[in-house]
Figure 1 (tube, helix red, strand yellow):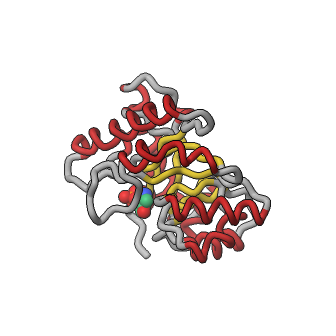
Figure 2 (figure 1 turned 120 degrees about the vertical axis):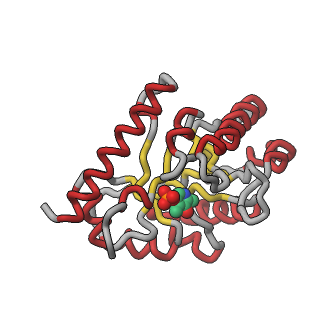
Length: 233
Ligand SMILES: *Cc1c(COP(=O)(O)O)cnc(C)c1O
């Protein structure tokens, strides 16, 4: 077995333990937390190593790279788009993507829904929320969603299945907890208000803070750098 595969396997073993520990602390079942291995900075042979190790939920942040890589492999891969989606990329990305985490405006949602209708697809989507209100971050504000929530019922070619957020980058991951908690509270609030949309997924937590995110209810965690520690390009 190659050096790279070995190293990634070791890293993943540590990560799986941390997932289990966070689940134990919050009395959750580890089967309810899906690890998405983020390959945006990964060399192709690292991606192959992940597949060899049986990880098949892969996350890319650039639509272009996702689309190119989706063509390279025939294996069953569930591709997750976690980065910004430009409207001119929608048509190519929809057929190869299992879940789009980064729907960040009504305009984009509207375009995705229309194209999904034309292509006779029914994509699963998460709404990206800028919980912390940082100016540099994409996404809906809490109030955008609460004030306009009835408008989200009208999209008939897409499934809105949950919410996604990124916590501010802070040294102490504990400081990310309020962001994750607020996303979960928002999910509850929106679910109480909606007749048709049912939000069941929370995509939150990255290499630095996923333990806290799991404690606060993450169902999807997105890890990149921690998978590939110790490997040089
Ligand atoms: C890159 C990226 C990740 C993974 O971040 P790491 O800190 O490398 O684990 C997760 N989510 C999004 C949206 C990203 O762009």
